[in-house]
Length: 460
Image 1 (tube, rainbow, N blue to C red):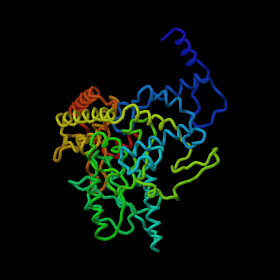
Image 2: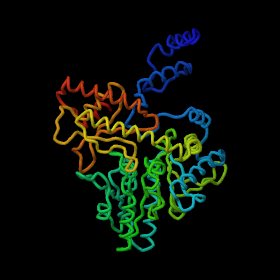
Image 3: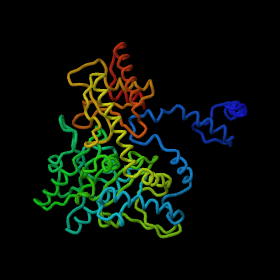
Image 4: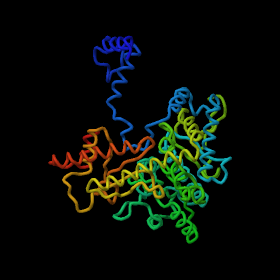
């Protein structure tokens, strides 16, 4: 640090602005020096966890320098104002066409879709389209539309929000011992004339495994043949939508299956874009109900708008396009394959160092690059996975432990999500710290092992 820079810092922290506590609740009366306030806010950010050590998040925590530069260049671009920023709008359209090609849409040139603020918004748009199509069919047949239902496996919270917000019965298939995923049999047992759609997840949040989209599609084809019920599929590809095309290209889960009418994915997860951008695509124009399309003319032109959100930043979309052009299929395959290798390494090492049984090892043919494990049945090591997670936080690692949803609420699971930037060197350090944590727990037995509620309350 230069002498001048040192003096500047001394002046900053000796300033009257920072001599007393800054307002925390009441709105400030006076303006202050930008350098002083920047320093104060920057210092508070030091108290956040290190994002690179956060092995709970699916979101990107490392980006190339060029991404940072593009985000700065786009800080003033409003994605919805397509008349003012026509090239940003064109870049969004290119991304939609590229994704349509990647996901085997019938015609990528006339792809139907849009960017969103994240995968949850994209999922809600896909779900809403299913509801609107179902309502239109029921009305055409003179039948009531007051009892729609949606069938999912054990899903991320966004689908619970969707069904609650739009008054839909959520028929969530519970987990059972020996079955942690949606199966065709479980789906068919819940289908009826009020089912607006079925949502398999390509990368279940709790374990990382892909649900069997092809088998579910085949079962629904047979159901239509037997009963006439035509129930569409929306694939929640939040994670797997940017993994399977590169690392499991022969897996049939996308628009190759005619019953798949829409797909959502998260660009800021394995799409490698910065927070936050999602994508939703429909198979064909007819799959997006006209009632969901709005035309806006007060921003300078007559523009089509689909998304739930209105004003939103354009930088993430521009950076998504950068990644598509920069990496291509080859680059995405390289990046994700490295993640799968790290996951495989972790699975092998974790199985060796403690009383753990691997639930999912990050097999690229079966799921996302994640490792999940539980305590071996019948063992009582004197600590819980919540205790281990708590101990790892001492070294900055966030390795979440949680209980599974119904009907496996008593089963605790721990999971590591391997993203771009989680190198084998970092993984080796994590294993060392896990071994140290286990040694500490053995040397200092836990008097009262943590439960999921206690762990959640302690950290939040």
